[in-house]
Image (tube, rainbow, N blue to C red; front, side, top):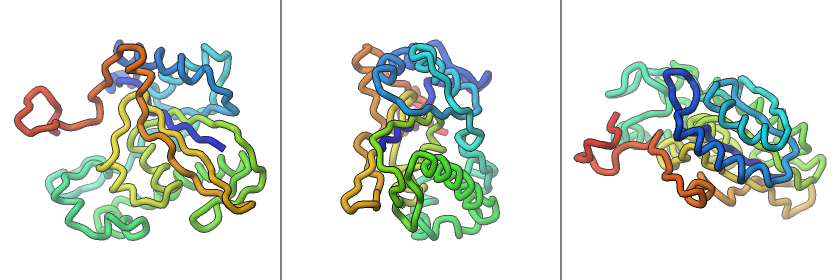
Length: 241
């Protein structure tokens, strides 16, 4: 089975939709995804993800299941130098100072994460993910998936960067802090995971592409900077905080 995780197009957060650039990105994305044989589409409840998905759905004459758990990962916490902000945006000198954040199990025990019930929300989201995967024949067992109906279906999730890292953390058994700060998925990027069933009945998801934006380059569209921070501190044109 294949999972495609797609981030929404360049956002206009003030109206929870897309900018003009985001609409161009979504159109180029639709040309790519509409050529695929997709078993089922799932989309976040938020407008920017739904607007992105709609280009592909319209082109294919399809609909998507709207899922509350696919919305952007919401917990707000207090942390050093970043009081009352999203749980997944830390300064490097703060999160890398805690060895627990590199551990796939211990990261949620850090006091501000625990106080903000971040791990509880993380577990809720991934419980919903596992329900979907079970419907498609793959049931979570320990840190892998028990194959109940082997298939080569493709399912697509239209969602958000922070949430995407939560899903990847669960599927790949990696701390989400490492993904939130060490991986970037540009608007309309496609991340692909494919099951490997090396022993009958036991599958593991393996990423074959992370944050792929080849459809933008093919269409001559410069990738959006949304979600990134300045490459060098003295670059005043790029986002700092």
